[in-house]
Length: 542
Image 1 (tube, rainbow, N blue to C red):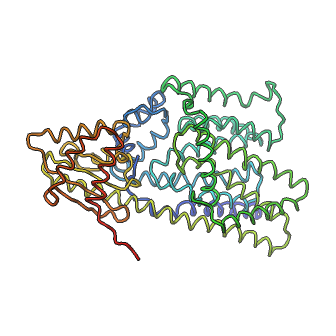
Image 2 (image 1 turned 60 degrees about the vertical axis):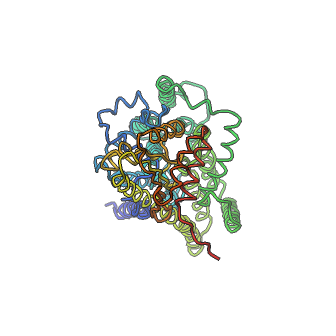
Image 3 (image 1 turned 45 degrees about the vertical axis):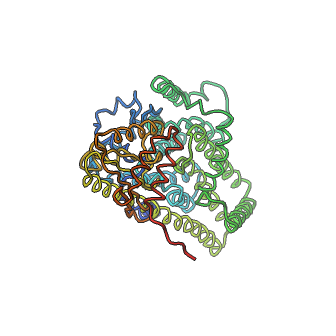
């Protein structure tokens, strides 16, 4: 009779590892579940609450954001669009459903990283657990989880991971997994365009990890052809719908130089948990980690060294490069752009743990290795809590600003001019959406003339014309309404206000804004009003 206890023990160990990753992915983000909308969230949700899931197939042939930013975005993302429609069912003005899904996606991605470490890197359970925990605890991931709009990176990453893992399982002998790989890749492509790198990743995986030599024969090419054809079809559709393949206009020498600078900062964000200059203590810790890792690798048997070298090269170099390369076409820098690429570093950490524990036979020293890994995870977790706290603060300020703005506008005489200054971290690209349903009971912009600094406007390209028209329309009224300037503290959300009744020169200062014909000059003038006339002076600490 076969003893089933070892198998049961393995199942319990696997369940415990999965539970640890889910807890590590969820607990730090519990405080974000009711965090209010921020920045792009206002425009995205404003549009999606008015759309039906029945538009899913139409989104394959049109930009999912339509023209709400006053330009045609080159983004065909039906799966992401559908997810926002569905999470909006929780309540049009409620952020809860959106945050719950974001956290769930992050937890699943952590589980997939652990499974990739087991299946494709061949790591033991403990080392794979380190990889999965590191992925969910990296501070760089916060933007993709705590920010509702960050889902545009976590969701395609889930599909990318699933497609890669299914392909690896097919190579390991699971016949049906190949078709799942194609299905997941289809979903990845139509969630975000940066996932087009998967076919290259599959070839590199087969070559480096699977040790399948490259032969330009049909037998060698056949597994990759459906992935390549799907990619070509996706890019052709992009060109037909939005007029660009991979934002090729940004692929120039200057764009490449900027990309290299961004890549250095992203590497620091992932490895040390922040984008600031690496501190001396962190350099020392990284140097020690490198020395210890090299010493561990050198002590491995030639067979073990060869077995770990291939996945180390694949994830440590190829996956990182493929994951970060699409940033060259992004046009801007954001931590969430390395959400997918971050798996490279976390699985490499798992490989280091595996190498060290295989060379050490003393139970005491192996425990020391796991203690070191735990210390590194704790280092990430501490920074993670801090970054999550910053997003909590930004959301609190955003919610308070919406409520106070609505109260001020409803109390103001119709036709008044309201100048609004809120923290960029809370309201970048937020207006006019934040002043309209579902966030407010009525469209506040139809009651008063509303102007803001350029960064708070949804459409910076048209901000100058819009602001000038708004000022002119207010000034040309038979009897222009009063001027009300509002400023929200970036830490507390406390409202500071000033009207022309309290400061009579304010009306003349605002009327003088019409003399500014350039974007930068007008923006600076509005900011000067908010910061010098409205914002309270903070006491200097000596």
